[in-house]
Image 1 (cartoon, rainbow, N blue to C red):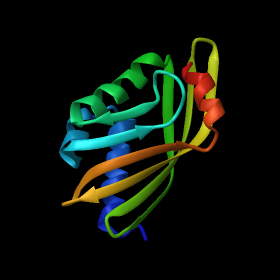
Image 2: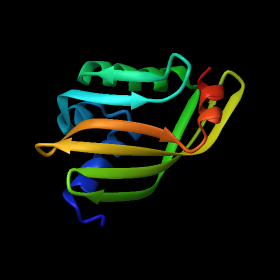
Image 3: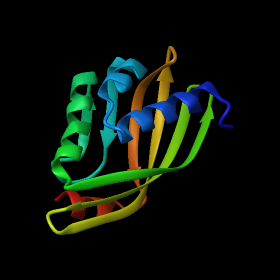
Length: 129
């Protein structure tokens, strides 16, 4: 299903996030984009609007001593897509090594909403605490 436009858009967004390319991500998202990040710490919550989303993602990068990701799978359908990636990182003596799913909802060929869903929420919470 990778040939779906929604899958291509989602993969482009993931690549922009993975390479800290805020300019490209801004072009792919609606100005009113919403990013849902689970968790109990300060990194969790719902971020409304492009600037809030970019600030949230920038904050993740700044908070980690090392953070990288590898694309695992991309799936798409009509106005929906999913990206699975594997993340590794180091922060304050803690390490991260887990998979995450990004679920995308598109409107007018732009990203309108994203849900970030770690396979292991407890591991994510402990890393970002």
